Every structure is written in structure tokens, then in C-alpha cells.
Length: 239
Image (tube, rainbow, N blue to C red; front, side, top):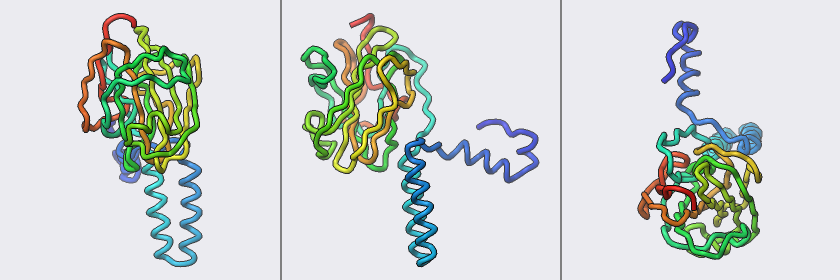
């Protein structure tokens, strides 16, 4: 916790606001229009009936919680591929990266993380590096926890070249409820490990494809924190 300034020490209100800022996670900018709309709807519903206003307020709070973007602290250790999302490890298997990235059709180890509607839905860079390719592909909206969701669902794929020369592929996959994938990075951009680069609205999935020789550090069913949980140890040297 940050030390109190003299003004905060003598002002309980300022101190309470400081505590709130340090405790409550900030909201992703993409959520602001939804929350603003929720506030407006809540005020209108309250004029009709107070119970409706209460329901509208609760729905607005839930929306703000969905778009939360907690601060993350990546591990200081180098040579790791971090989780790109909060959620549950649903699959660990070999699979071919999305063809739209133009990579060789050779299977790589893939770790899939499933996000429920209660998880943080921003995506984080799994390592520091340069974005070499971004490819969007429309598709279906099957339940994101199904194996075939990686192949059939709407997705946005990112090819990241790490500072050590490794290729990491991160894929945002829409789910049964998710109908909007937001990617805020472009080819040539530099990302720092744990930096937010996108968001998927409502239940979804994120796949991470690892370079050959990586050692997976998680197990199926394990909970991850985006930008903090190490998913794998990358091989020494370049691919």
C-alpha cells in the first residue's frame, strides 16, 4: 500500500478515496460506453420504479466488473511464456497454428485457457517482443470449452517474436456468448510481458502455441492469471 500523504492523513475522505483506488481494479476503456449506458438506463428505470432502478444499478455494477483490468506484475524471471488470460487451463495438446498466420503446418504444443463470464476478459502479452502478424478470421460461436472451438469459432491470431527470438502464437477465440473480439495492437508494435493488448466480451477462450522444446509448467484444470502465471519455460536459444 502507498504511504499516506500529509493531506490524506488529515483528510479521512481523501484517505478513503486513495484506498478505493488501490483496492478496486481500473476499467478497460472499452467498457465505458456500456457502463455509461447502464447508468442512464438505471436513472430512467428509477423514475418508473425504485426496484427497477436497483436492478439496473446491479446490472451496471456487473458490467463494470466484467470490464475490469487489474494491474498485473509479471515474474522477473526471463525465458517464460505467461498466461495471456485469466481462466482455467482446459486443454494441453499438440495442434497446428491457425493457417491464416502463414506458418508451417507443423503441430506445436498448445495450452488453452477457458474464460467464464466471471473472469477478467482482457488479454495480456505472454512475453516481451514484437508483433509480426495479426490475422482475424470470422467463424461460428460454439461454446469456447469445446475442442473444435479453436478451429470453427471466430478468432483473432497474433504472432509475437520474443526478445529471445522465439515465436509465440496467441489466439483470441469468441465463445457461445462472446460476439466481439477487440485487438488493440498491430504488426510492428512492441509489447511488454503482461501488457494488455485486447479483450473478448463475455465467455471465451485464449490459445497459446509454444515453440518446439518448451516445457509446460501448468496442468489441466489449473487457474491462471493473465500476465502473471507462467504457462511454459521456453527453450534456450532461438527456434
